[in-house]
Length: 84
Image (cartoon, rainbow, N blue to C red; front, side, top):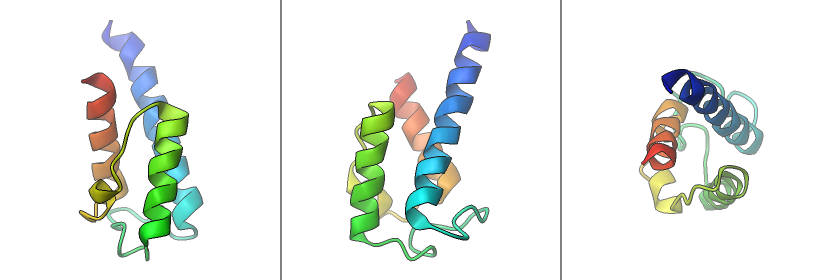
């Protein structure tokens, strides 16, 4: 059963990364760069949360983005919500 979950996990991680980089723009794929370091603002937080809900069916509170996560942290949080 684990092998069936891994592609789903990888797919979700790719989709989250695509949303993040699409909305936050050039340079947002820099490892460890946080939401605010990438000049994330409230409109970007709303757009990311909406895209995550639309594409992945996961409710993401924009307040989670105001905790200034990096992409890896955000992805872990979303994966935990999908699996939990």
